[in-house]
Each structure stands twice: as C-alpha cells, then as structure tokens.
Image (cartoon, rainbow, N blue to C red; front, side, top):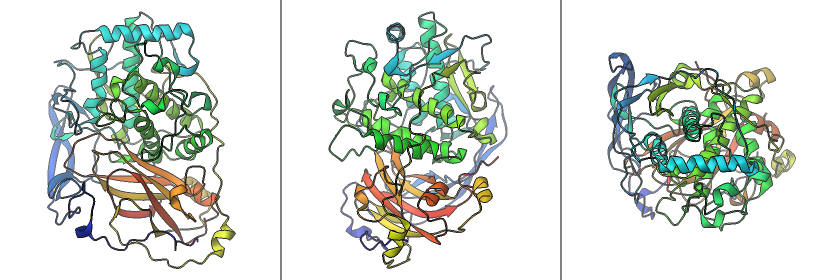
Length: 559
C-alpha cells in the first residue's frame, strides 16, 4: 500500500469559509421529504395503461438551490418512451440564444420497420475518403442546408434533435413531469445510433444514392487524430466557424485535454492508452454503456472530451460542439458520433455482449425518416448494424495492446511507510486540490472464475450541477504528485467528464463506475485489503463526492 503523506486530506469541510463565488453556502440537503409519483405507460395511441414507474422525489438543496425537487436517481425505472405530444422549451445553458428544439408537429406516429433489400452502406474513415465520396457528402449537406427550416429533414431540424433529447424538451409518455435525458444514461449509445441512421438515409435520399454512408472521424487511430481536412475547408458546406481556433489541423487531438492547461498538440501514445482503458479494458456492458438512466458508461465518458476539445472557447458555452444543445449544428458532430458508434461495434468484436435488460431494450425514440414520416424506434432493433444496412470499413485498432506502465513497482510501494488507513469523512467537496482516501475492499484474492463472473467495481456517488464543464481524474495507489498523472500511468483508472448541457438550478445525482479487476492485477494489488483512491480535479465547478465504494454488482448485466 503506498504512502499518502504528500497528498491533501479532508476529514471535514467548512462551508462557511468557502470562497468560491459560484458555490452558495449549505450545498447539501438539510432535510428530505419523500413522496411517490405514479406514472402510467401509454400505448402509441396515447391510451394509458398499467403502472409506469414509482419515482421517489426528495425535497433537497444542492449546488444550484437551497431547496428544490429532484428525482431520486437510484429509484427503479421502466423503459423510456418518448411522448410526441409533449415537447416543450429546452433547458438551455446561460448565455445561449433562445431557441426551440422540438420537431415539427405530427399527428401520426408509426412503428419503424426496417426496409427490405436495402443496399449495404460502408462507413469509411473521413481522413481517407475518395474525392468522389467527398463530393457526394458535400452535395448532400448542401442540399440538406437548402431545405426549408420547417422541413424535418433540414439541417436546422436535424441539429435540433440533439437539443431536444439532451436539454429536456421531450417528456416521457404517461409521465408529464418527467423529462427525457439521453446523457449519463445507458441509452446514450442506441439513441445516437438511431440518430445517425436517419440522418444518413436522409442525406442519401437527397442525392439519390441509397449506398451513401457517413464517414467517421477516426480519432482513435494516429492517422485520424486531428480534425479531418474535409471539415476544415472554409469553402465547404462541411465547415463550421464555431470551433476551437487552437485545435485546427495539424493540431492533434488530446483525449486527456484539460481546458485549464496551455493548449498543445496531442500525444499519440497518451491517446491510445486512454482508449485502451476506456474501451478494451472495459469488459462488462453496464460499465461500457452505463448501468441505468443515471450512470454514464466508459464509452460516453470518452466521447465527452471530444466535444469540449472541439468547441469554440470564445463562445459562452463552447458552441457549437462544446455544448450539447448546439453540437448538432456542426457537421463534425456526426463524424465524431459515427466513430463513437463504430467503437461500440469494435468493442463487441472482442467478444463483449450488449445489455440485455428490458428497460434498455424497450426504450424508444422518435425520428423523422427520409420520407418526412415520424417513426418510433426501439433500442432492441438497432443492436446489429448489418440489419440496419451499414457496416464500418475495417481499420487498425492500435490501442488494443496499448497498456500503460506502472510508475512504481509493488516492492517500491510497500517499502514506503503507510502512515494512516483512515478513510475520509464523506460527503466532501472536490474543488481545486487532489484528495485521497482509503477504500476497503469487500473481497480480495478472488479466483479467476469469480473474476470472470463479476467485475470488481469502484463506484462514486456524485452530486454536481450539469450546467458547467467538469472533469476529474481517478488514480489508484498513486505515489508522488497526482497533478502530473495521465493515462500513460497504470495507476490512472479513469476520468469523469461532464459537458455543459443545461442551465439548471437543480443538482444532478449520478453514479460513476470504473471496473478495476484488471487494473488491480496490473498493479499487483489483488491481495491488498484496501486501495488508496486519489481524485484530481482538472476543471469545472465544485463536485460533491457523496460516497465511494467497491462492489461486484455495478458492472453486472442485470435483466
């Protein structure tokens, strides 16, 4: 067990002496009052039937208000079903221009049926597109931008889809007080897959080419670690001026980007090692996708940094890519998410399995298709890309074997004095300085069979306000200055990243889970009674760490 004498410890937090101007006093709830709200689930014709969900609501405070109603994020939930008759104003971040995100009205919603005998569409890396495919893409976007604004296929309306589902415009069917949010949720990946599916088919129909396929920004490969040239041409309809001026080609992407640091070109090795940790090293579906509607998976966490890195820092909220309400306005968004979708496919190629619980599989979304018909789709129907009529051109995945190296050996760590095993008093506020705590492991030295069945998972219960960008890193058994740690170090376990997506007086409660079975083996810490967990704030508002635990359930595939 490493020494932690050099790291900052907090056992209490004096709120009255807090100096941050953005944090009011008494950030924690001082009392709770729970009541049940019964929602009814309706069929597609709006005929309510049966109990939809019982959600506990607590009267509590937080970073944004002295008292407000917030949903208990750990209550059980049923599938998310979008109510096409109930779409309101979005919850926009401060400084955003007023905008409406709901699609044009339609009195008819039909269940989507996959078209038969559709030609296969091959999505290719954007940096390697042929001139012919580049010209087709430009023409398709040009025609989409030329459509009337009230056409649901128009570029304007397509961009608003992300705003509607990510900024609380839509309500759940049968639940007039429950808004839909696809981020920090297991439905993050399937929602965006369907989103791209219809966007791609609309573009193909506009140029009369059913084989048209979206390119993907291959940012997980060294050859694709810069904004692809097709999006950087100022004369092209694929160009957007609202991007970070310091991150234009040939600047390399930094997947470990800290917006408070001086901008430099990215590090290929560090990028590959981070993808290895967030994709290849994650074996359980609930750690990859998210366990429920309140937990972000590793795929979403990795994706968040690309948004913040790409957005224009001269804009109030990093518009366009840097804020979820506006990111759909940038063609780069669809190239980014095409790669996110591809990584889901690559992850499954390693023998991994999709989530199989009903809440996930039966969740549904609404999209206009290429014929301007409003259709309802379900997660369970998008798990196989070949059935959707597309696949990804195979490319190398150099991050698969990009393991990080340990900073110190176990012998070196054990040779140093361990001064205390006291855990921090929780909750605590994470603000400017790293904090460390000892976390007891409920079981050690498990057999390989036990490890294959259940992932040892480090779980954080977090409270924060989602209106601001937030990032903190998680280290395990780290020695030395934690501020210099990065994904090249084996002790680097993960990063929590939030992209600004609301102007909310309410705090958000989420869980952040990291599978650590393989990491502990790499650190030769599998037989340790406890681990030292270090949290390193990188940027953003104060975050409340309400609890830190280890369990063997958070990353299981519950039915």
